[in-house]
Length: 359
Image (tube, rainbow, N blue to C red; front, side, top):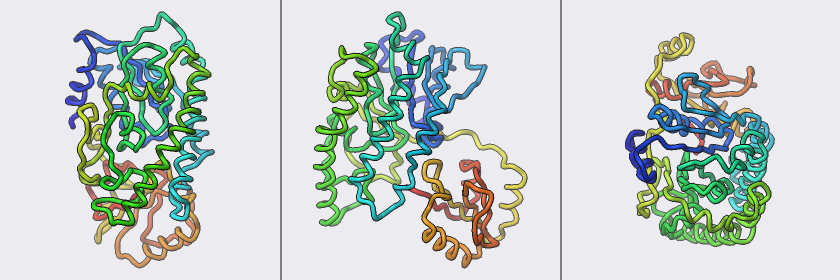
C-alpha cells in the first residue's frame, strides 16, 4: 500500500480534518524496524500535524518544524547485550526464544518509560494527544499509554503480526491452517507441522495469559500508575493494526477489517552507489550475490562452523559475493568475497542475481 493510502486509513480514526497532535512510540533499537516508521512520522509532520516521536533513530531534520523527537539511542546497548544471534540456532526450541524476546522488551520498556523527557510528557495532564501510534512487537506495554493519556491508539508493525496480536484483535488464527511468524513453516503444512503449530499456539496462550501479560501490566503500572485498566484489556482496544507483510512471503489469510496489510512503506527513491561499490558491481562479470543477516543478527556473531560452511561454499562459486560483515577482517576470506560493515541495501538490490538473508 502506498504511504499516502496509509495516511488516508490513518486519518480515518481521527474525528476531524484539522491539524492533529500525534504521539509515536517506536521502541525497538534496530534500524531495520525504524526505517519502516521514519517515513510515517516524517509524512505526518509534512502534512501539518504536530508529531512527537520516541525513537532510537531520530531524523534530526530541521525542515520538519512540526516534529519533536525524543532520542533513546542509548537503548542500542540493551539490544547489543541481549543479542539476537540465538535466533539463528536451530537447536533451541521456539518456546525458549519467545521469553527471551519478552525479556528484551521488558528492559527496553522500563528504560524508555523512565526517560526524563518522556516522563514529563506522559505525566503532564495538560499534554493532550488526538492519537497514539505505537510499534507492535510482541510486548504490548506501550499500549498502556492510550489509557494513561486517554487517546485512541494504532499499532504498527515492521513485519507481520504474531499470535498475541491476532488474538488481541479478534482475528481468527487457526494454527492448523496458518503458521505463526516465528515458526519455520510456510505454505501448506504437513500433519506434523500442524501438530507442532497447534502445540505452539496452546503454549503461547498459556505464556501470555499467566506470565507475559501480567508481568507487562506490572511494568506499565510501575510508571503509569494503577488507574489504568489491565493491560490485557487495553491491548484489545487497538483501533487499527497495520502490518507490513509481503504477500509473496506470507500465505494469504483472512483478517478482520481493523488489520490492514501494508507494503513498501520503507521504500525510498533510489540513490547512486558510492564509487567503490559501483566499481565492484561493474567488474563482477559473472554477477553478484548479496549476503546479509540484517541489523539484528550480526554475521560476526555466527558460530564458527556455520561461517566455515559459508566460506567454503562461497569459495566454489564464480560470482562476486558482497557480505555484510561487522569487522575489518574475515578469517580465511575467499578472493571473490568482499566484506563491508554496512551496505546501502535498497540501492544494491537491483544489481544482484541472488540475495541471501535471514528471515
